[in-house]
Structure formats: structure tokens, C-alpha cells
Image 1: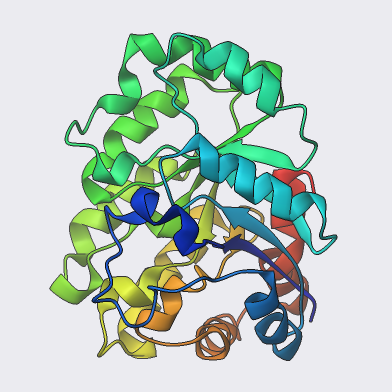
Image 2 (image 1 turned 180 degrees about the horizontal axis):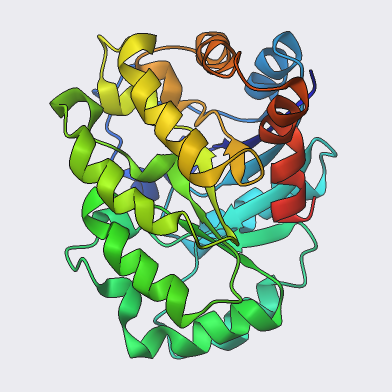
Length: 277
């Protein structure tokens, strides 16, 4: 079964200050360069034919870096970048960056902002209108505490394509299943909103098990259905507690009860359609 990974990261320590919020020299797994040469072998091993590269820093310099990598490599089909959406020039900035055909979406770091309702700021309206004008998608990097405000944002901009990253980062290790499930239910009838199945092994922690992940996966299978779920690896962050192949094997097992056609949608077709790859 062919696969398209819609959540992969590349970074270089040449831009180390931009990653200092979450990466330090003490991190023996992530504190190094990760680029296309590192990704291709694990992709080939797991029948992943192409990727969407997603920002890992609050920096327009990284946006340029990622788009430069994508420009020279056919297997990088899209980039989800960071831009300062509150800048007075945000609308014009988005128009400029949108000239890059492989720019597919924008991702602010909502999970790290102290204001749970940041996304509802009226000052963001010109940027969101510009995203609509230029056909860009919105990656919602949120935690459970942000879900309800994200729903309000989606209702405010019903024509903006939105995808929820990492299943809204459920607190699997803490066992807070029911509050997360209850709030995720608000996405059920928002037919244009997608959800990325990625990043959840790190939310469970180093002792994660497929059995603990299963109720969370079954919940998004039920809420979003086979047409609105998208595969992502969160590589190389996944390497903190697993590796590329183990995550794919875990998800493959979790989807065994789904028809093969639905599995193919999740592994590749939905992501291609959502991001316009």
C-alpha cells in the first residue's frame, strides 16, 4: 500500500536559535541536523513515496529554508510553514510566499502560546482572509485545552481548510481520555475539517504501548471517518520514543479492521486531496 507522509520535519543546527524553545544540546536524539538524505532511507524502507514538510520553528527564515529544500526535490510535495500572522504586513507577506507553488499551509504554534483564545484575535482576520484568497490550508497545532476555541475559529472561517495536527495531542500518559474525547466530538459535523494521525506516541511517553493508543485511534476513526483522516509520522520527533517503522507498523495494525480502500485513503489519498499535492 502506497503512503504519503503529511507530517515530516527537516531542520539544521545552523538555525539553532530558532529551535531553542524545545531543543537543547542535552537532547541526544534530536539535537543534530535532519534533512532529505536522512529521510529517504526510512521512507524507502516503509513504502513512503512523498512527504509534506512541516515547520518546527517560529521563523520566516525557516520558511525560506524549507521551501528551498522542497524546490529541488520532487519527493517533497508540500510545505506547511510558519509566518507571523499578527504582523501588520501579514496579508502581503502571505501573498509573497504563496508564489511558491509548494507552499500548502500555515501553522502558528498555538500549543506554546499562553492565551488559549489567541486564535480568536480580531487582528488575525486580514491574515486568515489572505490565506483564503491564496488557497492555503491551516494546520492547527493544538492541545486539548485549545479544542473548543479552535472550533469557534473554524465556525468563524467556514471556508478555510483546517487540519488538526497530532489528534490535538491527547494526554495519553495521564489517562485523560474522556475530556479529550468529549471535546473532539465537536469536530464530527465539521465536514471540511481533517485530522492528522501523528505525534501520539510521544504523548504517551517512552513506555507507550499500542494497546494504550488504540482507544484514541478508534475515537478519531469514529469522529472523522475514513475520508478526513491523514497519515503523518512526526519524524524525527517520533524517534524520541519509537522509530519510523514501528509507528507505521502500529498504525497499520490499528487499521486492520478497516476496508483496504479506506486504509489507502488514510495512508495517502486524503492527504493528497487536502493539501492539493
